[in-house]
Length: 122
Image (cartoon, rainbow, N blue to C red):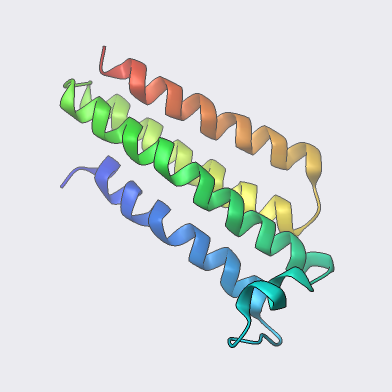
């Protein structure tokens, strides 16, 4: 399995990392969406990071698969995938820490990696 494929596996669990932070300190599992909607402060931002990580996963996974199917240079594909993971980890940290400008920069880096992965196959 390539490093890029391992990165897809890591990306699958990023939403769980952020929602675990959101749920820390109390959570009503009988009404999870209502419980998350009532959060405030850094825990609310952790939930938002969770939601954004869910949205980012599908394009990233598709881009890695496309890059592999089109026989993109493996070192380039692996580097882009690792950069995506690093940017997305920092995105979540910046979200929770309320660093909006840095968070947006990390989001943009992640999206550049996704587009570059698709293009790496061509």
